[in-house]
Length: 190
Image 1 (cartoon, one colour):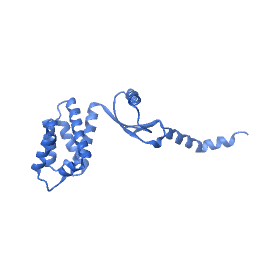
Image 2 (cartoon, rainbow, N blue to C red):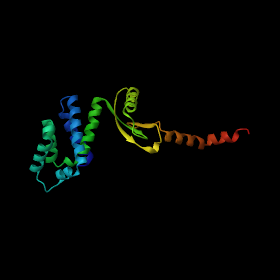
Image 3 (cartoon, rainbow, N blue to C red):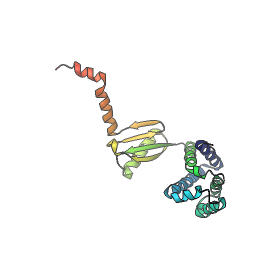
Image 4 (tube, one colour):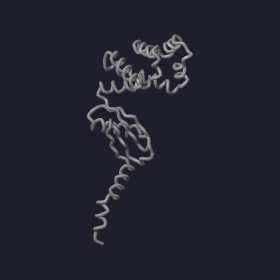
């Protein structure tokens, strides 16, 4: 089975287990915390991926390590992933689960690219303006790219809105290089 198929199947399973929208959100938060833990501590991920460590030992470590912080159904779900040897696909499963939860809750995912880190009041005002523009809740991943010089680039779904200085300079360059502009400049009286 391919990674994407596994992610689809197991994200659908946990999505269908949740009883309500609050639980969808709560489980998403917990699952993302587990994925973040595995990213920040590669040795923990290696432990759960190691074939020489027995399943019972891994299940016990999972239960003692994070079991107390998780809903019992969610812990059972993670144990099933371990038993079926799909735990290595947890980041992909959680990413797919996130898409399902956001779709259910009417939240659009977006990316906000700026030349420098925005101060919280400016960032919050920009997010609020974009939520008003899109008439819904947006969840942004912030990214810093000094190459855009200033302004910002907003990506929501497959739509890209470029308010950057670099983008404006590129548009100006294209306009100046276009044949129509060349002809107009050539036909101008001296």
